[in-house]
Length: 309
Image (cartoon, rainbow, N blue to C red; front, top):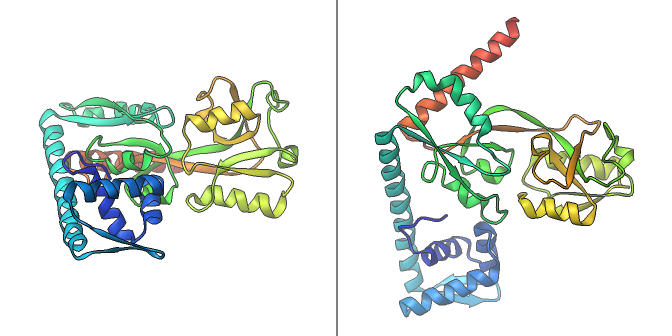
């Protein structure tokens, strides 16, 4: 978790102390174990203290390390609270909703919601905050909800994401297949799973998305003729580039049909979809919480209207 008020080496040390392992801390921080070890060497050199005992079974805190670990945890809590309060105060004073936007998680769905609710917030304005869909850094961006921005509209059934934010469901997007424009599937209106036999399908590795895991289980049990290639845990442009470069198939969503100009989306005869929604901090400030409540009331009224029509 990145906080400008806190030395980043201390953040990494806090993760190592909590995990007891460079490898596990690296997974939590989305860094390589080598990068974590180098940061710890740098921190010990800066402090002129030995903080960690390296063992074949992991790392152990020295007495000095235990003291620094307690201080790092305290400073991390203070940094998080201070930034949240400062940015919330700035946002509330200016009447600004900060909305994150990126290639894979654009702000357009939020704008559609905003146009319907703006009458309830006559003094509020919007500020779009761009961020990168970097597979290694996206979790840090999600953790900054409430600090860097108030809201994202994201496609999400990720356990990792939902451990770090809350989501108001807005709808679903259909799972589709992306192919290169010169692929034999590019002109098809719809694919069946036997069409994919002998092909390589790129998709995120198992363990974080219930929908993706269900697709994997279905393919493994009933369609083993389809090869699966693991992608990074979260998509970024490099994943779409690899699809275009290799000619492999890519598990994608209908909302991402324009992400890469060399690729086209083709629907599949299945019922898999993934939810998208309004993402916000676990403890939103009063300004953001009021908007979430207004959005929830609007969606509930839409639902009831649909049931009676």
